[in-house]
Image 1 (spheres, rainbow, N blue to C red):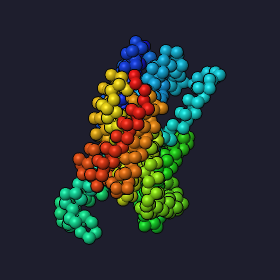
Image 2: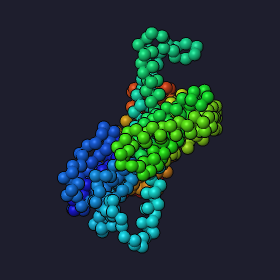
Image 3: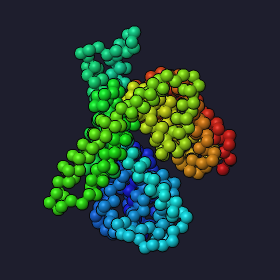
Image 4: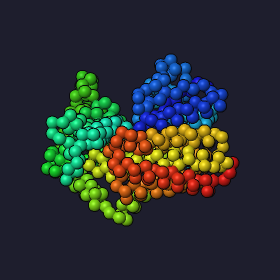
Amino acid sequence: MKLLAITSCPNGIAHTYMAAEKLAKAAEKMGHEIKVETQGSIGVENELTPEDIQSADGIIIAADKQVDKSRFYGKRVLEASVTDGIRKPEELIAKFERNEVPVYGKPQSDTLKTIEEVKTERKQKQNPIYRNLMNGVSYMIPFVVIGGLLIALSLAIGGEPTDKGLVIPKGSIWNDILNVGSASFTFMVPILSGFIAMSIADRPGLAPGMIGGYIAANGSFYGSEAGAGFIGGIIAGFLAGYIAKWIKSIPVPKIIQPIMPILVIPLFSSILVAVIFIFILGQPIAGIMESLTSWLNSMQGASKIILAMILGAMIAFDMGGPVNKVAFLFGSAMIAEGNTHIMGPIAVAICIPPLGLGLATLLNKSKFTEEEREAGKAALAMGLVGITEGAIPFAARDPLRVIPSIMIGSMAGSVIAMLSGVTDHVPHGGPIVAVFQAVEHVPMFFVSIIIGMVVTALLVNAIKKPV
């Protein structure tokens, strides 16, 4: 068979390319031809042409982001998560061999479904919410990264110590850079909202989503000193998206259809979102955000330890999957709220799984196959730049031993980082963020990472059986 595939993950970094590689290897092993288009952080690569699609026997979409399927009408299309593309490539391809994949855009005959098919359908029905949210997050992250790095660099290089901490003198070039970083942060919530809405309603949802996000982030619209923050932005994005989608579904005369997507839908969606947020949702959500921020800032002792343990465990549990992304999004949002103490422990936990497993392969080679030892070298490199997904090959082969080990290691590192006051100004992790001076309390940042990776390595080697 000639198959095509598209892989894409919210961040567009590791999962996107790992899934592409796994699908390519599986297809070659099973005797099929495949071409994989990656939709990563740098854009579309190896793009599928109309000729490719015309001659294809089927298309696999392994993505946790919204992917345009309109070009595949009339072709057999199988949708799966990007994690399935990494862990189950043979199973996905085998469905085409068994002729179990439906034709996109055509109704299927009523047949008795197996329990497995029902479970898959239920999972897919839940998937769009996660995909829509992650679509917004993927576009938001560069703005937070740029803003955080510029603010961190301006304070580290241009800041002068005072009784109130580091202060950048007025008129200094570093003060201008600080302002540029702050400006980048102001885009965060509107971008998040806009691309959530666009994922739901396509382009007509973009403008009302961004307008709703801007209103959510500016409490002056609804008489609040603080805005509704990222929670308000998420709600505004979904609200704008579903309102725009609803208006799109309303039958209108043909003469009005050309102006629907550029005028009517964005205009009325924006008005409705604005009215709902200004008069109904704004103040209550802003109150929740103020309470959350105050609670986090007031956490001491045992409560800080518990939070750090939860965040560390979530980051390591599925190594870049949905649970990991929830913790990551929480830390990213708190940066914009002025609380960088949450992202600090998360930044430590992000790199511990790959670094710990890479170290484990060096400490006890008898517990790992030749392939795993090579994967260990790659995991060390990925851990240094904050890519948790480097641990996936180990977890996929031996999940019952590997996952608890990396979770305990990440929890240990997170707790030490939290108690040591480690902070991170950018939504990323690993030693690389210290290179860019985005971390405060750098020595304890590295101590936390080293302890976490040693704990992981010792645990996994203690419970893993020799090969």
